[in-house]
Amino acid sequence: MRGRGEAGKRLVDGGGEEVLGNRLRLKILKVLSNVRELNISEIARKACANHETVAKHLEVLEKEGILQHKKFGRIQLIQA
Image (cartoon, rainbow, N blue to C red):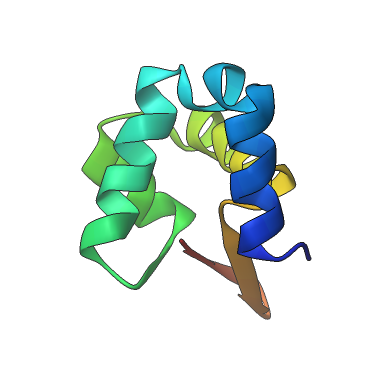
């Protein structure tokens, strides 16, 4: 996984508008800022969005190095 410094630099350098320009992604980040880590279902419930849509947005945020995940068997926890 990438370091957060690198992700922040890339967002400032120009990629941030595409990544952070989405309301649901911002809502997801807000949800995770209030809680250390959550599973995808809880994030979806708190963000008032469906599981599949949230999972796709989490992939984008993780790819950019903004989020990280941990897996425990079938359970995946996401943390900002």
